[in-house]
Image 1 (cartoon, each protein chain N blue to C red):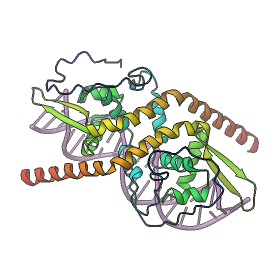
Image 2 (image 1 turned 90 degrees about the vertical axis):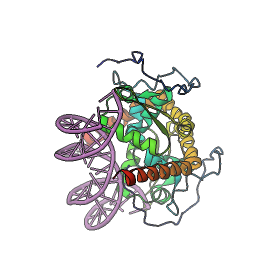
Image 3 (image 1 turned 60 degrees about the horizontal axis):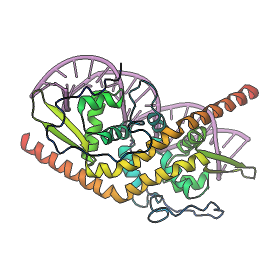
Image 4 (image 1 turned 135 degrees about the vertical axis):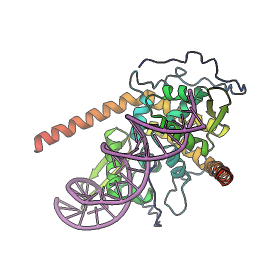
Length: 157
Length: 157
DNA sequence: CTGAATCCCATCGGATACTG
DNA sequence: CAGTATCCGATGGGATTCAG
């Protein structure tokens, strides 16, 4: 993702008026929510890594089965080979993907999820499932929002 | 371009050992993995929306409790008000966040997750939990990768 | 086939200043 | 306090070309 300077500035407000009780999440309640840059935030860090345009899609594909470079490229949709290479390097660097070079002629390279990558796959599939189920709802909300905004402008202008 | 289904690449896993059996995911196996741009891919669409630098962090914070603009801004870390506004507009547009204007003086605005947003919260927390548990492992892998790459260059150059 | 190297532009997001 | 309006640098990522 983009660069992130980290000037320090904390002071969590914690004003009152809360009312929505949250079902106790795993681990500490606001553990992952504590991203006040009083220290590095793991969520922020991880998200900066896999929050790019392709990483998640690539991992989902590799979650189906190991794939070679070309296969992966076709499977993931429309992606330039440069960007796919960069994405895979990043995932490999972070230990999420394993890269196995087959010394054949011509050379072929097989990518697959590492154990660490596999441990993340569940959450990614959770996201994917939600997306499949709710993309329509989102599109609907968006259309409604834009429509109302359109009428408002139409009236106001 | 058509599917270019995997025409049984005979040269796939000569290394054996790949074979990661996938636990049957919800819905169809590759439903969400079918992003070959033969039609729109919901995962891609959703991800394009919340895959920016702040949306997920904002939603996680709002998942803890409703927050006012300023509170949210401090809670999420270091974010310009412009970007926070844009992010919130996007989330609101997509129906993930609700914006309630309190007609006080000075005006105050409370943001909270909509039902749709709440339905996504679980998956986001899954990601967050994974991040909390594995950010160290990722950092470690990264360090190892860079180290090895360093030695290689040191030798080769 | 895999992938490194360039070029190049759209955009994302940060800083700053100004309204209600 | 919440939000809008500019300005602008950094970056992501696509197209293309070259190489092992």
